[in-house]
Length: 486
Ligand SMILES: Cc1ncc(COP(=O)(O)OP(=O)(O)O)c(N)n1
Ligand SMILES: Cc1ncsc1CCOP(=O)(O)O
Ligand SMILES: [Mg+2]
Image (cartoon, rainbow, N blue to C red; front, side, top):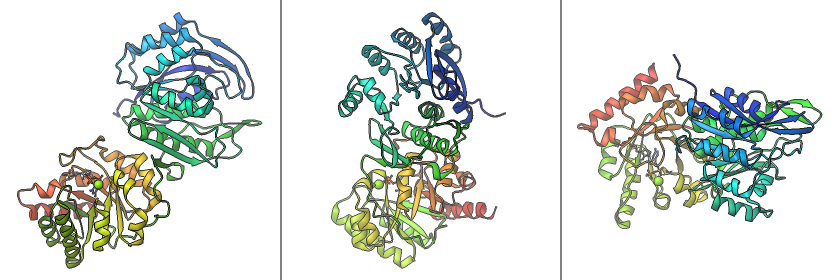
């Protein structure tokens, strides 16, 4: 028997034409393997071209319908159109009865695509409602309506100061070649850029985006990964939408996003050096076992055991010793004809003529990628999810590390273990770029890593904390050989 699908609670308007609103939410949830309940706030009498009238649901009826919140606790809630303050208050009252951990995603639509008004909320109710939201997803006009500021810079800073933890400003209304959505999170500002599809006026794009985000967050994705996946869903929707009226199109039901062509290019805070694309290929892209070690002693031991790749990962030491160790590591790599990567210390790696350098997402922000490419060093990069992956794919690095797959005690990780199912999805997006799985991997995990399509594994503790490290290396190599043969 398969697991129960995640339940998404959808609260919003009924669009009689079926293009947007709760019908669009239900189609989106079903396509993304979820199940939803729906509570209507209003009926908006629309065709695909005209908005005729809006009828708000009575608050007592709304409150009664919302008792489903307690009867069928959702894994995430998507809020859409709310007709008036009384409804907003009623929704807020009901939301207080459920755990604060259930994410609430509000698509703050107040005007339909046919320019009809769906609702009107006072600033004070908007402010209070925002306090229970995890994410709010305004487009540019809605940014002004939500904040009461017509100037978009002021509106943005007001919402960042007074809004929920996450704010997604959708760029569909801006006139640029790329449709870029910007996610303001507590840690970073993420840009998600996708090609604008000309001549398509697709209905319900805001509903699809917010509902898809709710589905992905309900499945445990963090907000930036959920937004990245939702952007892929929307992009595919635009490319497969069918005309329903002179200027209107409707998207078919979505499916789980897998096609790399539809994923956005992401940027975290600032753009990475675009000139630095294409790093040298690995001599052995199917390298199998990749020991990551923290001393020259260990490096010597793993190279002597015959591995074709290894990494020197030294976190804290005095600069003179570090300088010496990086040079020794490069010399050892040459001696054993192995692909030795230097973690973090890219200037020293360039100076010493290393085979390659490994950088994490924070390192990428400060490293001179063009200098690394010009010095012909290979580049390996770490990723921990969709948004980070889409940030590094355009660089065409020499390999991409995917992690952490399983719980690890070697490093304190800010993200959750990805698990082998996600690993398979990331692997598919990497195309021809070699990949390596890292985090909590020993011989027992190798079959599921390989089943996810990943050929290579990076390990720390399975070797360095083993009672007999040479035997541990042999056992890991054997486990890899067994799955390659199978
Ligand atoms: C093969 C491989 N994968 C991931 C990492 C982690 O790099 P980073 O995210 O920069 O973290 P630190 O290792 O610097 O703590 C890695 N080193 N190697
Ligand atoms: C450096 C690093 N980056 C992601 S997980 C990890 C540590 C992996 O260590 P182990 O193989 O002991 O789980
Ligand atoms: Mg690093």
